[in-house]
Length: 240
Image (cartoon, rainbow, N blue to C red; front, side):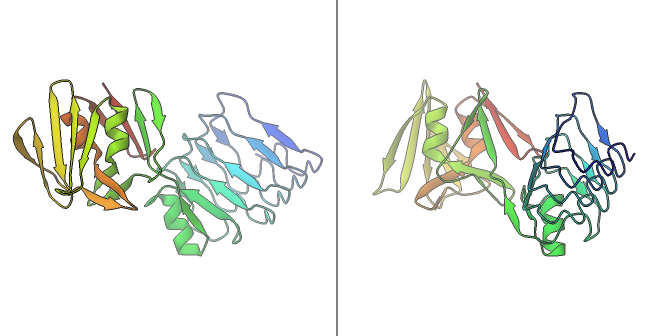
């Protein structure tokens, strides 16, 4: 508590590994502070921690953060953006936590978005991440959630899993072949054909921004992959 309060000449902070809680008013009034580096493992930002740190412009929190208390960034008049890298974070229910002019970046349907909507802050949604065998896959059309299912660009996910892909424009079907597995899906249909057998999809294949989008879990598992969903990090993890 109050450990660096009023240190106006403090310009940069690199916090040590193992730190979990940043206490009440810890950096209050550090007007010269412009840069903060949070280690993974920080879970809580206390009341008034960065109150009136008028030099702060951008902040990105680690995935471990779960709570921010009242007045944490009040009067941080230069703070343009805060990024939350976990959907689990809870922000104290008060307009005085994050300044009115600060853009909040976080995951859709998270505590960060709810706070932004309630108190009129600009909100930008982070894209859902897809990790295949430890590698992040970047799509030109980001994954989306429809009907509680995560849809990804079909060609991108199939090719990342090592499948050959063929598009039949006349029939509006896409076929992927990998080893002994053959999967065919049709645009707008809730049915897929896997090795000659008809299977049901919870959400039909569909075209979004000229990209064919398919349910990632069903399609990946049909090619023999294991699929896990990390709700806090909004991340699909696929392994073969």
